[in-house]
Image 1 (cartoon, rainbow, N blue to C red):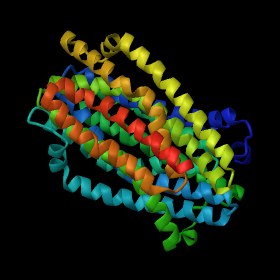
Image 2 (image 1 turned 120 degrees about the horizontal axis):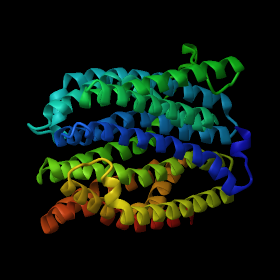
Image 3 (image 1 turned 60 degrees about the vertical axis):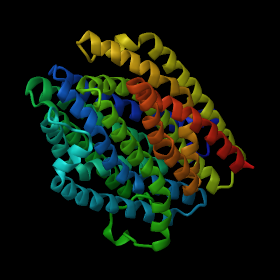
Image 4 (image 1 turned 180 degrees about the horizontal axis):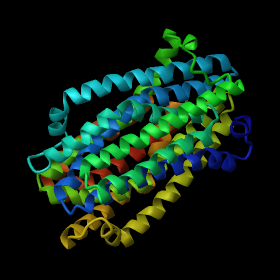
Length: 441
């Protein structure tokens, strides 16, 4: 842990914490693409559309874990920077049990309101059955989905970066293997995709718990599953939740904006939803890599802030932003040139391939801007400045995005709806630069 957080070489420190997180996010993307690929083998646009429509619900479930995972990670990293190991361990213990309890509550609520949730997501008579099949198995696995997603953040803040990445990759690889078995071999379609996802998270959660037991036996003060260490310290909970909620809202509001977007795209038919679903999956590559880089660096930023190493913290932020912009620019070039051939991997119909290729060329225009937006969000979370993080989140997914979709749809119909993402993120990039400049002054 010490060698990572106290690394003097800035680029090396960023790579040590950023690359494992990016690798974890990449495997998450691969399993998402695998879901879509195996479902696409059914050659049923309604089934592909159902997977797209259910994605926001799955993101909302994950976001609940982020309240405790990301909030706890920020608090733990800053406490470690201040040398308060006992308090850090208490925060870790609280987050673990709180995530398990939240998962059980969400499971019960999700199954009770299954059909209404499917309809809110944009399901119609063509795909309602597929959508409900997918959601049912996702909700059954909710407690493990929450634990696995929360532990990723908590392990990074505790310096268990390798273990956090292995757990994420393990769950995703198992998911992909089960995708093949359940969909391609057994023909379970969307139900098989959801069951594979849930079982992958079950395996990841079990791995993380085994790691915690091992660390506890080693005498690691930060890791303990003992009930007696569970604390309802009001100040600690308030700090975790106040930081975690903006982090979770990133995912929740992204899901809300995607639901709005899906509903507008569905006006133009299931084929349009299917084409957008494929384009969005491809565009998720630079999105998730950027998120992985910024989230991986966040505990390092928080540690420097807690230890009052302001110069090092500033250098970490600037280098990370630069790497993010360069990475995004590469993906923009790749998608502009190879958008159509990449779409052809998942689609057989030439019209859908053409449409999906066109969509991804529009969506990828915002990729270089993600390096700034995602890093600024993680920066404010790491420093415990929840209001700033919340402002960026609200602007990105509600204040700018939803009106943007409505206005652009009015003037340019489907093309305008797809273009809403790069247009909004271009505006938000300028706002983020202004907010960071003001904060550092």
